[in-house]
Length: 268
Image (cartoon, rainbow, N blue to C red; front, side, top):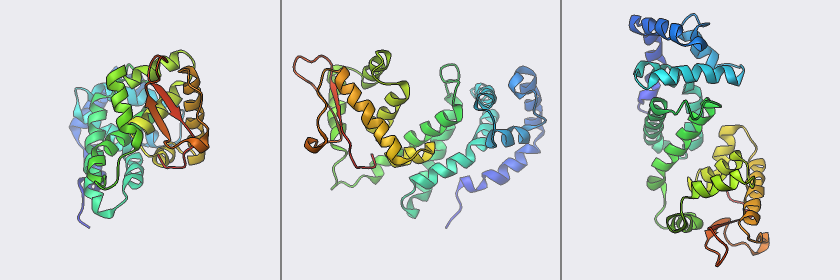
């Protein structure tokens, strides 16, 4: 099996730690960012981010590095090194065929680097590592979806309906944001629906990345979708009569597009 660029990241990082330019920049970051002031060097920063610790403390360190990464790629390299174990776990879950190894890692690294350099620190200052990995998961699966899709096998049946409804009735994100503001679902539940229904991230993959049981996440989504039905003025469809796990359809005289869900047994 031929080596990939990711295989060289660990030795490359050891060389970077001896780089006087990187050491000089870290001293400047320490002075400018209180969250970094307690660390002796960047090796200590990476050990802290990879190890156990308080989430809020790690968020502060990551936000400091990500803010610098917008202008300084070398700061982004530090974040990439800290994320590497998580990225390797994601690659293991995404990879379904060893022949796709190069394609998966190419898409994953490109997505990771783009998110690191553009992460909205001001808007998403909490659960930063989890957000970065979830963004990488979504972006990578989107990039691979077209290549993996079997032309003889139709896409998830509600996807086209969702897209059509969004085009005709407005943004699905906005619809879920309105439902969240009304208390019909929580922000986490809205994100769960968007990730698994709109971005088509397999539910098993998401459960694994979050350390949650598949059944737990599935029931959490089903309950949220049923509450959305009620909020939108629809009667929940009994499971036995449900032919699609989730759909958005225009209900005559019922206002915005409706979301219908049930207890599907799929991985999606």
